[in-house]
Structure formats: structure tokens, C-alpha cells
Image (cartoon, rainbow, N blue to C red):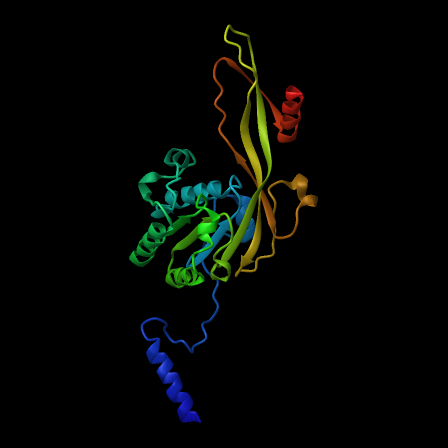
Length: 283
């Protein structure tokens, strides 16, 4: 019985040689190193993005995924770390990223036109090494196409990034990596802040008041985390009673460009009031 067990073990080890080192040895759990996202509320919630692991952030459009990406890229490039962005749908905006503080000279932008090109490029970057932060942006890819990605692809990505110092971040509209991810966050937009610009003086060319986007309030919830952090902090202490465990809220602000013809006074206008005013005008 012992000889058959030993021979079977030797056969399995020889079959997996070169692919899995010591398949019958229990690996000791270790706390991975993390990098900050640059958003204090999010960093206090999750502790940071783990190195040597796959992090997935998913949510609907305009939920704050791109803002988190820009903040993380700005933090990494400011630390003289080389980063890479695999853009599946060629939707990255370099100007907006540079305005957010990203040093473009330390960022490799891979412009793809489909999932096949994106995953091939990602494999090359992971196997080539040399990048401390790699992002796969699937946020603008149709959900039905991302769902067709086999689960073994995500397992392969997780195995590739293990035992490295690289942070692999995946942005999507739905969770696809599942248990292959070390950290899974769901983000969503909770509120939008609009500002009503009022003209200081009337001129010959009259324009109706326009509502400008000033920012939004977003929330992030931990769906899966291998670190199992339970300590929660919130950026908005006034809404502490409304917050739930395992969630954090953060503000996203947009730059206001006010021309000389417009006054500097701006009135906050909730999105609900905007809808009511539009309905009254139509009536």
C-alpha cells in the first residue's frame, strides 16, 4: 500500500514538474505587501492593493472605477514605479490621467481592439516582468463578451502574478474573476453634485443657466478579501450612522472652469431637483 502511494505521488510530481513546484507541500500563508490607492477612505477599508495578487474592481459606468485607477497610477508613478495599462477598448484618456497626477512617461499604454488582443498583451507583460502595477481595463467592453472568458484564464493570471511584486488590477462592469481574485471591490455612485452657474451681467447673447458637474459621491464594498480586514473608516463622518460594515464612501471632484463672463458664485443643485425643474418646463 505504501509503495503504491509513493509511486502515485512520484508520478503526479513528475507530471506537474515545471508547472507547479512541490504540489504536495502546504504553503504557509503570508501577509502580502500592499500599495495605497491614494484614496484615504478606500485605503483604510481594504488596506491597499495587494502585490502578487489579482484585484478586481467592478461596477456600472460612472461609478468611480476610472478615478480609482487614476489615483493608483498617480501614486505609483510618483514613486518612480513603471506601470502598464492594457486598454481593451481604447478608451483611456491620457489628458485626464495627466491632470489627475499620473506621470505618463512612466506608463505603458497598450491600446487594444478586443478581448483577444487584451489578454495576449497582458500575458506578455506578466511574463516579461519589470512592471510594478498592471491594469486590465474591461470597463467599456460589452458584458456579454467578458462573460465568455473561461474561468481557467483567470486562474492562469492569478498563478502568473503569484510570487511577484506586481499588482494586477482588473476593471469591469461585473465580477468575473470570482475566487481567483485576492481582493474584489464593488463600487457604485450614490449621488451627483451639480452646480448652477449664474451670469453676473446680461449681454446681447443670452444663454439659459447651465448645470455643470461638480463631483459625485461613490461607495466601495468589499466582496472578497484574503486579508479579512474588518476595521472600517469613513471619509464622511456626518453620514456615519447610514454606513454599513465593510463599506467606505469617497468624494470625486471635477475641476470647475469659470469664464470671465460668469460669476464665481455656484449653487449646489441635486439631481432630483434638476429632474423636477425639467418636468415643469415641459409641462
